[in-house]
Each structure stands twice: as structure tokens, then as C-alpha cells.
Amino acid sequence: MSFRVRPAGNDDFQAIYEMAKLTGGGFTNLPPDRGALVDKIVRSQKSFEREGDEPSDDMFLFVLENVETGQIRGTCQVFGMVGVHAPFYSYRIGTLTQTSKALGKTFRAQLLNLSTDLEGSSEVGGLFLHPGERAGGLGLLLARSRYLFIKLHRERFGRRVLAELRGVIDESGGSPFWDAIAGKFFAMNFQEADEFNAAHGTQFIADLMPKTPIYTAMLPESARSVIGVPHPKGRAAMKMLENEGFHFDCYVDIFDGGPTMLAPTDQIRTIRESRLLTLDAVADEVEGHPEMLAAGRMEDFRACCATVQLSAEGKASVSRRTAEMLGIAPGDSFLAMSR
Image 1 (cartoon, rainbow, N blue to C red):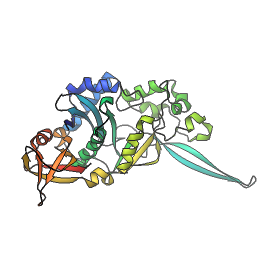
Image 2 (image 1 turned 90 degrees about the vertical axis):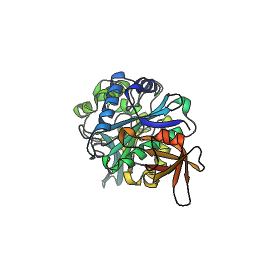
Image 3 (image 1 turned 180 degrees about the vertical axis):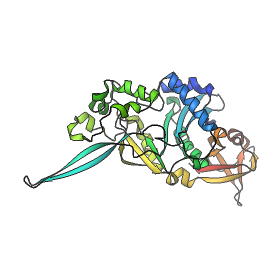
Image 4 (image 1 turned 135 degrees about the horizontal axis):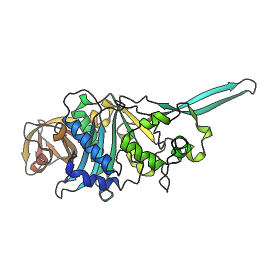
């Protein structure tokens, strides 16, 4: 496979922007806004350059590169810690039980509570694969590259990782969830709010969003039916997250009601099961099973799918092409994860 994942650079801007225009809206981490994307690239570069190993407000932006053609065909992001400089809001789905002795009835009401419970978590997001490449396991490579990066830099991330999945968007690009709740207080439609959030952050939520619990029974059915439901195009992403050990724990996005998936960092399958190997030799060709490989610190990080040959003594060999794609030589260590 001639694709690898690497940190994004300034020269990747136009390709990232063109992919952002293909997302169809509601994709907060990849807005089709030139200024916001430039800021993301700059922020990512500063995160890679930052000294120190403690978790912080880092954002690491990666691209999927076809090494043979130089084309950029996908992107993904990893956030070191959310809620460092601004509140990280979610709705927590809860239940309130009340009993009337006079009526002899018990009522259980579902509530949405504005919450910052998830602050301090790390986050994976912004995964987008060009429609022309949605075959051959490239989506899985993009997804798992984030976990391999976390494992290689474990000290830079929190004890829990979250992933926000895009919620249901209607044919006009609107959100039934937004229209029923936040839209009542912000005098802007979902697309306007989503673009503003992508460019300026969530402080406007703190300024204007009511803090009282919301009874879902008072919402229209169009809004209730999409709470915690992913966008149809996000179901495959949800399945991949579940396969990694993520689960839905009753937190939803405050904009579109999409589910927030959570997992303990060290229990994520790729982080738990990937093996640290030392490269013993490089050959023209090797025999073995295809695996997902990753190597390199910070801006030297690279990930790809390739074959690793292990001897009876456990010595690892890869092809010259693989070594070049990962930037490794005999004596260097790298991670390997079975597909």
C-alpha cells in the first residue's frame, strides 16, 4: 500500500480545504473555512513543537498521503486535553423519577443536563477520507494511526479519550436537535452556529445557553428521535469506535445531539494490543501478514500498512520501501498492530 499518515504541513492546506468542502456540514473539526483551517495547521505545528510531556491544549493534525503521487486523500486529528482554556460542554442524559401518592402513579422523565464532565479528556476526531478512497482499509489506517500516535506519546494524553460523532442533519443542512433547543436562544440557524463554533469556539454557548435541565418530553418528536443518534454517514465510524472499546455513556453534542463515545485510554484496543518491535533488518521483499505500523516522535511520526516478517527469534524485518515510508533504520523501534 502506497499510503501513509503523517503530520500536516503548510503545503497541505489546499487539499485539506477541498476535503472540508466535501463533508456536507456539521463537521465541526473540519470546517470549510480558510481562516479556521489555517489556524488549525498553525496550532498543530505549535503542538508538535511544544516542549514538555504533560497533557495540554494540543491539537495534532494529520493527513493521509499517497506517497507515489503526493496526493492528500484523508485527514484526522487528536486533541491532547479538552477544556483547558474554555469549557467543554456536553448534554448529559439523565432521568428524574417522581411519584404522586394521590394519583398512585410514578413518572420517569428524561432530562438533558448541560455538563462539563468530560473536561480533562483527550479527543480523537476530524477523520475524513476522500470519497474516492473509501475501500482497502484506508479509513481504518486513519483511525488507528491516532491511537498509535497516542501510545507513542502516552504522557501527552489523559486517562480517557472521547470521540464526538456527527448527529443527524436534515436534507436542508439543518439540525432538528438544534432547532428545538439552542436555536431558540441564539437567533441563528444550525449552519451559522456550527461555522461560528468552528471559527471562534464555544464561549458563546456559555454566554447564552440556559443552564437549567431540559425535559425531553417537551421537545418535538423530530428532536427527541435524534438524541444520541449518529449521522447515517457516521455509523461506520461508530462501529470502528466500538471495535476499539469505545461506548456511549449518555453524553451528546450540544449542537446536533450526536453521541459522544468514551473509552479509558489504556483500554483502547489498538493501544492495548499493539506491540513495540525493534527493526533488525531491511530487505527488498519480506513475507508475513499485513499490519498497521507506526514510528517516530512528534513531527517525525509516520504510520502505514505493510508486512512485517518475524524470525523464530522474534527479530523484525520490513521492506526497504516500508522503512523509507516510516523513516526507520535497523535498531529503531516501531509499533505494529494486527489488522
